[in-house]
Image (tube, rainbow, N blue to C red; front, side, top):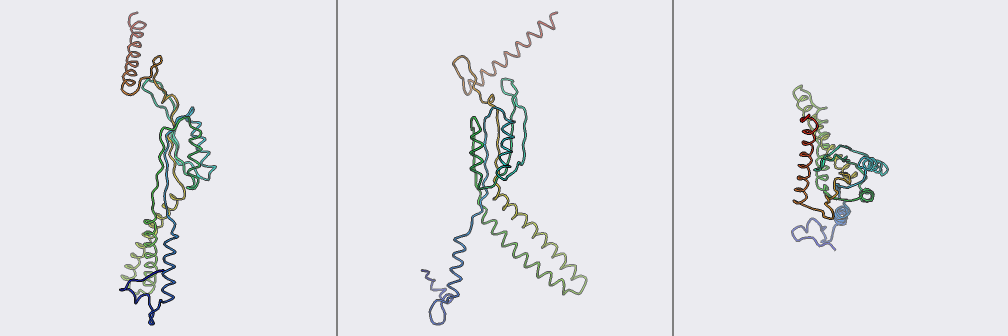
Length: 244
């Protein structure tokens, strides 16, 4: 049961010392609204995966987004050069899917990958920001109505111009706030997934017999191999082009 504070008893009691039914009902409604308030959370994810053919996987992810009711924001495929000098394809794609389908989309993307190098899912609660924008919007809309009434009653040219300019500024602020609220609504309804897609060759370990050097040793050996390749190519040029 709710017990009011002593200093606010006059706000909750009638003249006979009992609770006012209207006040109790209003208070209960307010509590219920606070309890059932829906949180607005923007959830996004990013992945880095390894596959056989990046271009094929990129197309499959795009089709997955459309099948879930989402769409492709951007996609790109390009060539990267490894330390060994080998050029391999790499791709990236960003999609949006309904927030309730985020986990399903992530599971399907990971199931088609040979290896998942990185996965990150983040959430941003924008309930307070959205609520504040809604309050500001209501205040501005009330001000717009009042300015409209003042404009209709204005007589002098200066007064009409001043009120009209203020009305224009108020309407601009209303449109800005509506745009911000729409951005929050769309971001919360559709989650973004960014996927970096690498080819298997990009993560294959360097092997020398049964030894697989890692870290600094791997970099040093790869640099040595590249230097020997340059030296061998130089000898071939000297032997076939310069000496004759």
